[in-house]
Image (cartoon, rainbow, N blue to C red; front, side, top):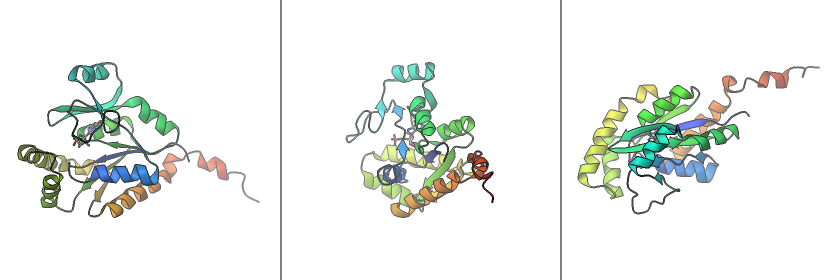
Length: 202
Ligand code: 5GP
């Protein structure tokens, strides 16, 4: 059936969206877009796997050369989605995930009206803080900054198509996959289908 779904998954850091996305890729065959960023790698992160890590100058060159589908500044660093890979995957009929923050998500929706925007949240903000603290990768100041940012991001919820509460990862992964399956069955995404049934009557 037609083109793949351009799926955007946003949500505060610590909402577990990264784990949901990993499972959609490893268990269900979704493609993922690897972003470029100017943030420094965390200890377990590899260039070209988790992100393409860039200097500010080389990131700004990507913007000037129109290589990015969208980009945004988040907590003092640039993040952006390389355009070419996303377009290739959609043409090949594959579902592709962009795990990006709200400003970028809205830029993509402007260009691709049929992009599907999903916002993920843990059951409560208290649980969000607990998950950030347990992760142990950020200091208290960064966690406070990310909690504040989470509340700001929640203001954008009405612009999203779906909210998925990440209480257990298994359920959240299933919920996202159900949404994508339903999206792929939309008549508006499959205008060629009426031809398939024409002339099919005895
Ligand atoms: P982190 O530094 O925790 O990896 O990511 C910080 C935020 O940037 C997250 O909300 C993540 O989804 C978002 N992000 C990652 N890649 C991109 C991107 O290419 N574009 C935009 N707009 N946001 C991104």
